[in-house]
Length: 289
Image 1 (cartoon, rainbow, N blue to C red):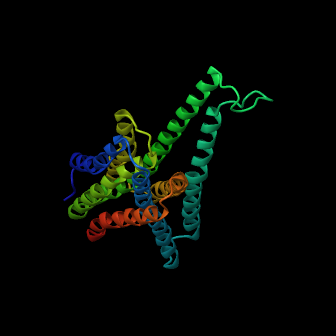
Image 2: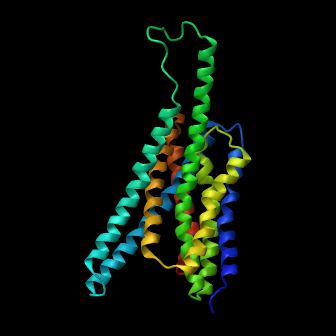
Image 3: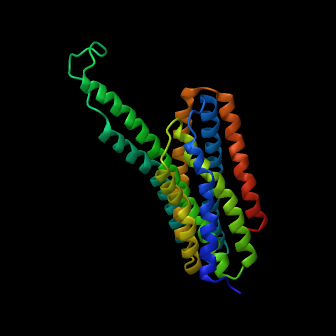
């Protein structure tokens, strides 16, 4: 017997809402450099696991289509189309985000000093305001990076929601329940992945609420879509976009924490974060998801 749409939507919403459990860590102030590195690299480890997970799911869809071709149940054109969709989505997720962020920074970069001026000789009030503006831009950049992470995780969670919705509609109640529990535990760690790279920037509660909706809300939306629609190309598109975006963000996190040092600690926490992702995903694997 299939699970009802209302019940499915409710449980999908619970699975997505657990992302809020890790977000309040971003409000903690006065963090030492070691703790900043540890938190940021722990989040990078979680993101690394999500990257491996989403790309494996995307590759599985293409490989299944290839298997259908070998058995004579499908045409090579479908495999080529799915592979092109995977490649295009991945490129958009990486290059597209990088280009967007570069354009955002270019619009906010302050103009250079007047030609012939000696830096540091005289600081006029306008220059003081410019320096303050630079600090504001750095804060905005950190928050933009955090929101980019939330969006990338949201793409991943939409695909997870699709799996929940499809299982519930097919009447696989046990599998759907295990998926919901597993994704709920997994999403709880994703909140750290959003706020970890913020460093000493302390986001507002409003920003955290928006980040939680952006990152966790797609689980609920994906559950609704998966309950009514089954589409491998749609699922593959979201996996590819999420994989590309997450890979870009991991690179940004690594670049950002290098200035703090503590390389060995960072690598250790990277491993711990990855292991935490694997551990929370084992429940999903146990249920056959």
